[in-house]
Image 1 (tube, chains in turn blue, cyan):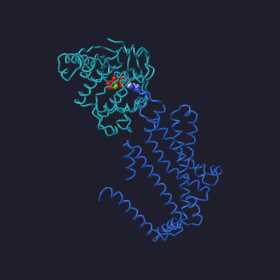
Image 2 (cartoon, rainbow over the protein chains, first blue to last red):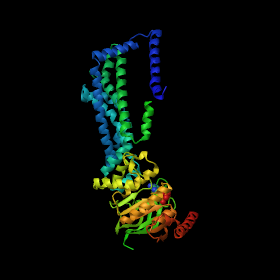
Image 3 (spheres, chains in turn red, green):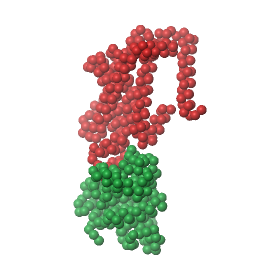
Image 4 (cartoon, rainbow over the protein chains, first blue to last red):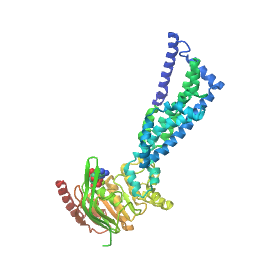
Length: 262
Length: 257
Ligand SMILES: Nc1ncnc2c1ncn2[C@@H]1O[C@H](COP(=O)(O)OP(=O)(O)OP(=O)(O)O)[C@@H](O)[C@H]1O
Ligand SMILES: [Mg+2]
């Protein structure tokens, strides 16, 4: 069997073993369905949800608030990160507050954000912006600061403007760090969306889990959890693919990314 | 000889690093005439790269004066080209775009620059690698891209920091001949830093020898071998006697160190 086939085949073995263990454990220990559902129940719940269509509005709600919040939070973090790395004054003005905000657990702000931005999608987007912001911001600043001084000398020697140095040298140099930030923000953004839905919402996969918990519908909860995992995995996959494509020259990060994939 | 282009007087550079102060240069005197080929020869760590960065306007002197065409140097200038000791290429740009970098930053005509860049790539033997990325080139090939980049905007003063150090003997010989040809055809002024005594003697009109760190001028030598010099020049007794003289000077230097 080739290495590639093994990479696909072996995880499938694990999956089948786990499913078997799941089924057997429920039978042997007589676990009631409202505590742990059977795999069949989860599958049928997924089928009902997505074929009959009840889950779609929740899935799309979470997807939308995460994507909007992610795009907004990461762009904001990138732009502010550039300003921060480029201007000592801006850094001095804001540094202490950035550190203070960074060390605060952002999910603790969820109730306040609901109060300010309402029960609809806006509050979810704001939450996602907030949790995506910091990893992206810190990585942008660190990346921009780590530019090889020899490349800066080169650009100075050829009379490049500050703007050119930022665009042509610093940002490409920081690309590896920036993508690492984007990668972390995918997972955190999803957490932010779900937490905001937990606190107060009428839609979303987080809301679905909460509502199902009240009725002890563990099969629905499992189905929602699986949906969330699919969102997270797809998001990470897209970012990893873009990373490999865009930062093609960085052999180090390219290999590292593959290592994670296999 | 013609007017003095570059004048260095009592130059001192002290680096402040975490370990304390490092005197890289102290009391260095040198000059370069317009159209002259000057080689700077000195032991490793004596401050040669530092001197070049100073002339390029990347560094300020701690003491002394450096003037270019009569004016003190207070920043990089568009009519100066530099080839760094390390290739220093942008890994995300193709070979051709790396060579075109000075054309872009100096806002020169891009179409004309592209023609010139391709000519220079041919000259350094990399015309088939124009669309490759630096990661796909060997160390010596990268260094040759750096040389083409230093020449692309046709600078009046060219600063070269051990540009041939990473090349194999054959390529190095070829590049020496080409550099001499370009210099003779374009009347550039060149400051050429090297470790290699034969390289300095072959290329230069004049050689300045620096002491071990902190670097200062300990010897100046005019090389009046006729031009154009060829591979045969390197076999001549005159050439060899100059090399031997410098070699014994260097042995002394290292002993003092
Ligand atoms: N940025 C720096 N900070 C502190 N010290 C430095 C710095 N750059 C160079 N030096 C010191 O200054 C001295 C001269 O360095 P320089 O690079 O000019 O030497 P060099 O003559 O070019 O050596 P080589 O022939 O090995 O390239 C060295 O002793 C080095 O340790
Ligand atoms: Mg050096």
